[in-house]
Image (cartoon, rainbow, N blue to C red; front, side, top):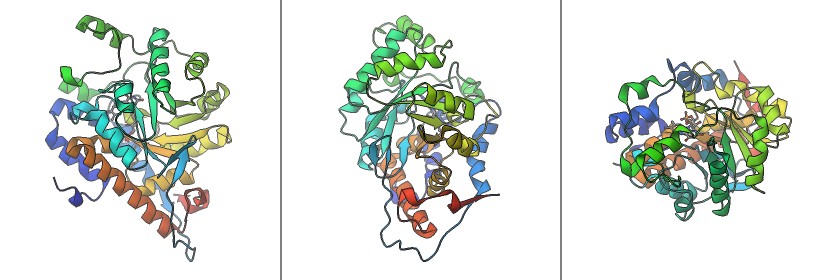
Length: 354
Ligand SMILES: Cc1cc2nc3c(=O)[nH]c(=O)nc-3n(C[C@H](O)[C@H](O)[C@H](O)COP(=O)(O)O)c2cc1C
């Protein structure tokens, strides 16, 4: 495909739909229930207008930033997403390389189809690791320790998936994961029975805030980030329990339908945490102006899920590279027109809520 003809992130979806098996595409695109939250995630941005300032010296605009101490070319990461081989045989290796090449950060899912170590050796850039907490905590600790040993610079604990949401598209299509696209991180899962047993126990429903203690210990000096926060109360609890960062997220609308769009609750959460941790956001980020809106409301950075998966399905590593290049160019252009030369010069005064 001619990637030069793709002009924005939304355009990858139609190509992905053509390339992918229908059940795998339904798994990627679907959300929970009536997919109200999926739609809110996309629509909520339109309630914010941008307030451009003029005659500011923007002869050189710099989109670079940092995410918990990791320098990045733009404050954007590839959200942790399972099973990249459903999109492309090069899976997370391609995703990590393209993201690294763009100077951005990738968060590898527990359910990745290349292992923690394989992705670390792939020649990509900065990496965080996302953890689903197995009922047998020893198994979760092992994953964290492997990520730390392989140079991952953040451990993202996903808090909003004690059980999967009620995802009707997935149920209707009954996803079968081909053997060569199964998760790669799990030990002692040689037989199908052992493997299914592992997956059945992957989510510890009894988790409470105190469990962050042993996860932080396993992570040693690597910062722990809690993903799936939607209230001020939980944001404060996360910082009280030692989280260095939180990701305001509703899991891309895949968990509790009618939970709010992250951008609608971001500002209150940033104010509640009062600078005690870095606040990130994901859900519906599709445009450079979305990134700027999130930063203006106090986010340190954002993550993008589906559009990058679609770019991977459409054209592998170059596809993800093209998507990130487009996003960086959009951020650069919007900063220039907004009259801000540096990311940390974007303030609340640059947006208005209608
Ligand atoms: C196909 C797919 C798989 C996902 N897998 C995971 C996962 O393994 N771990 C996790 O924490 N979040 C997972 N997520 C949620 C994303 O990290 C992120 O919250 C969401 O995709 C952001 O919304 P967006 O897709 O609108 O950008 C997944 C999302 C999708 C679409």
